Length: 107
Image (tube, rainbow, N blue to C red; front, side, top):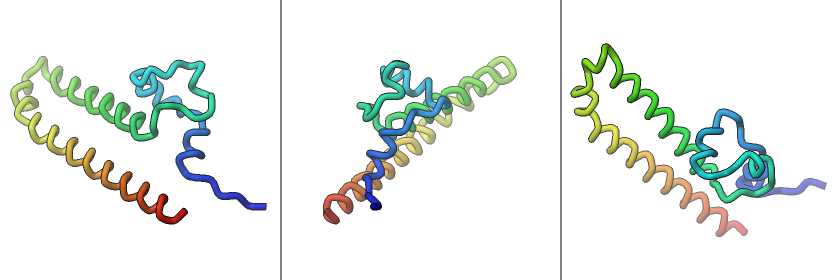
């Protein structure tokens, strides 16, 4: 027989990929909890933390470029980067809410 499982149940049952180890550490999930079943951390929280880590690395590289020659230029772009990040968060939140609404009405 074929059974259907909720997408998030399947995702939560899967192990967290190694590339998300730093994001997992920020959420306080230890190695002992990594391979267990459902976790408190959401897939969104892991993604968001990993993205912040990656953006931070890139900004760090820019700040060190040519011994800080472009620090003021990098600082100038802060409002645009912040705005883009907030817009992305709002879009993801809207998408997640739309998905949860459609899942709850179809059951």
